[in-house]
Image 1 (cartoon, helix red, strand yellow):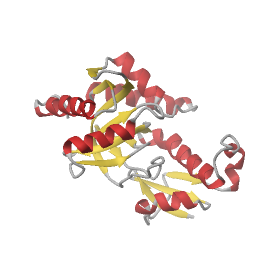
Image 2 (tube, helix red, strand yellow; image 1 turned 90 degrees about the horizontal axis):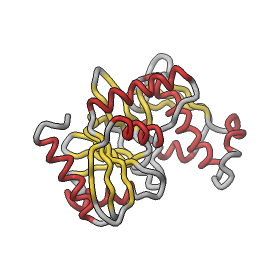
Image 3 (cartoon, rainbow, N blue to C red; image 1 turned 45 degrees about the vertical axis):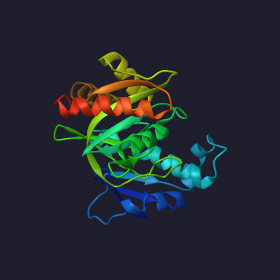
Length: 241
């Protein structure tokens, strides 16, 4: 049994998983009282693990442990977004898209444009988002994809960018309907109706307080330059929180 502090929540993990122990080393913590979230790894999840036959047992357990965490996250006004999250000048920006679309590449392009000391990765695959006292925060988590890049930090959310591969670079703000569709496509949708209602409530609040963009882009530096200039210029004008 191991204890962690993830997204300001007390997390109890029963069973052993080498990958989670390695990726979660920065999140290990001692706390008192009952856990907020319980995760079980090992033989008890072997039935679900059969859904992922190409993974090793350790990879299966690691993957499923993340699913358990994110499924319970709406109980604490939170959700996961399939995205690469970076911190720039004290705000978090998320680049979201399907697998293989270039989220991590776009993050690296931002680092090339602004410098890796200014653009720091929070989580390269599945950051957690929570609404606390009216503010949306982005958190690093131990579930960070193939790169394993993650930091145990909490950063106010500044914006979300959905990436679309394109031969030309173009960025535009999204309306509520399109933004909601993309948010739902890139999160874990709970089967529990109460959790689903919470998730939709969080998305509605996010769309009126956090800018959401769609970036049609190449994988060239100009795409990142256009994106960061648009977002950071808007923030300087007081349009972003």
